[in-house]
Structures are given as C-alpha cells and as structure tokens.
Image (cartoon, rainbow, N blue to C red; front, side):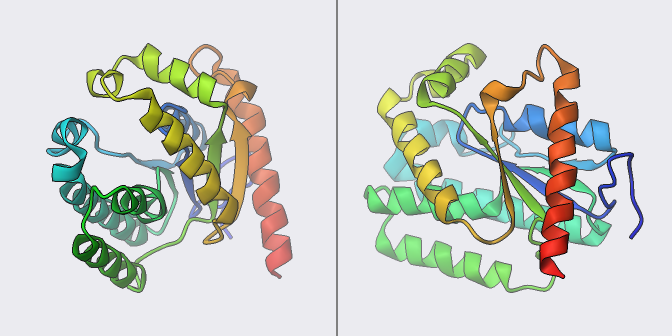
Length: 222
C-alpha cells in the first residue's frame, strides 16, 4: 500500500478526531492534517443556520439542528469516499446519533416521531456503499474541570450562556458513548499530554502513537 509520509501511515487512511465540546478537536484535526499532508473534513460551525437558535431554545430547534448536522456529515462521508481517503475528520457522524440526538430525545427536546425519523435516516445512510468507516477514531479526553476551563477561554457567547450542567452531562454522555463504541478502532489521548497551541512539536509523539496503533490493528485483522 502506498504511503504518504515518514510515519508509514497509508495515504488512504481516514482518521476521525472526537471528544466533547472544548477538547480541541479542530486544532488536533488541522495539526494532524498539516503534518501528514492529509485533507481535512471540518465541522461547519460558523455557517450553521440553527446553532445560535438551538442554544436559545433546545426543544424548538434540536431536531432541525440534528438533521442539518446529519446531512452535512453525510456529504462529507461521500466526499471522502470519492477522494479515496486521506482525511483527518473533525468529529464523527456516530456522535450525532449516539450522543446528541439520543440525549435530546431522552430529555424531551425531540419528539418520539422526530427521533424515529432521524434514526431511520441515519441507518439508511450508513448502509450506502459510499460510507467509509474511519480506520481510526482518536478520542480526546480530559477532566470536566479542564474542559470547562477551555470553553471559558475560547469565549463563544452561545457556549458562555449555556448552563454548566449541560456541559457536565455532555461530558458524562461522551464517556459512556466511547466506552461502548465499536464501529472502528479507538485511540484515547488525554488533553493534558500535549499543547498544540504553544508547542507544535507535541504532535510528533501523537503521530508515532497513531502509526504504531494502526500497525497493530492491521496485524490483528490478518
């Protein structure tokens, strides 16, 4: 298999970076892509027409927001398939259904009919031939205290106005979700173990871990 970089990571590899709000998914995605020479698949927060409305009224806008995310992520899945891989992806489609949609349904922010419509659409999407599952999912983890500090520092108004209880619950749901996730191999990285904002070289040991992890996974699959 053709390689793309000195770390022996195949050029068609798809790596997804995931974790709760504030862990630094976009920074990790961009840094990995730049270092490996991969394309990025980024979450489109600034152009999302529902995000601000959602934070003002969860019940009114949760279904709209989740459908929007689902459509955008599916388009990204198709784009990665058409390119033949070689992507670092910011956040996964699995989180949308396994965490966010489920949470809003359980909390009464999404009706049962809307939730069933959403999950039926998701199940139909992942059955299509152009839905590449990631070769690796990197889970960025950290304490709730560290995550709340990061949310405060980046200063997004809609996040600042969100009750702390919401972030605590989200943190717990992410932990529960990743503990049962099995759609692809998972590499956990603690956000205290690196500092990409102030030390770009801290990406090196992370990439070495990724390379080693992918090699091990390939050996186990033989």
